[in-house]
Image (cartoon, rainbow, N blue to C red):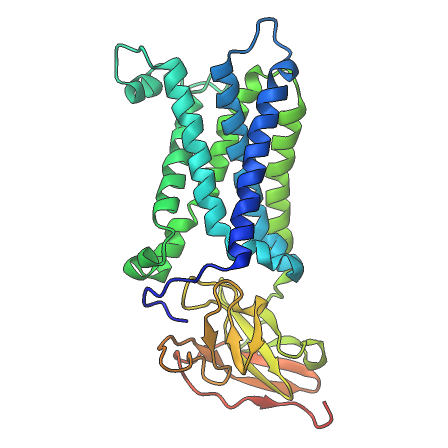
Length: 344
């Protein structure tokens, strides 16, 4: 596979993934509309428009929470990797659900405003100097804009057009967007809610996102001082699999075992910076778990006719400990695979 606008073919798994997403979203909305009004515990009946607004809003928040949990969960348990493969579809659907929430907000609160709806939304409350009563709407607007940008640029065309570093930096905006939506919910909906159920869910979800990211980050073994860094005992590296080691800064290398030899390449796939160390060697090539892009272990090059290349690293053994030279070789540099002791 290559980055030259060759589409990833649809498969049965992709259809099942999207079908499950749609069913779950529809079920949540219907259940909320059915049970949301009695659970609100208000003295006056909750208007149907407000109920729909809350249904789509809470659904979008929970969907975004799940999206941000998928990545670290897949790093902590390989069995969850299938959830990661089509996460972009999840993100696009989340953007659509959030947009429906915004449309209900404008339709209920600002439909008859003498000023334009968007201007009225941003000027109705300007109490930026206080916590309680803070204009929480701006956080929601920010999140909605970010989700729209990420959904619009999710196609591989934008990855190639913007370049991988720019595309990756752009999509990391999902984290400030999530922080903004937590603030939007905390300063808005939760201030008026009497039923603590969603407050517990919202706080628990935000804490789960933070805890899972910390746990996944700690799983990547930190590097030691000097040029040569310890990776792991060679016997601890599963055949056709890899161990990921963190080098300087945020750089990571994936050390793969291919039978009786070891090779190391950058952990970032040239396609979308996918985590190669979570993939495996298939037919002699390192295969990215996200979209199946492949590279030869010894030189980090995609097999012809594809042209993608990865940086490679030198390896050596110190007893049973695998050591890696933290200085990356230029992409496509051939490094002879490190042979393991006889009898392995």
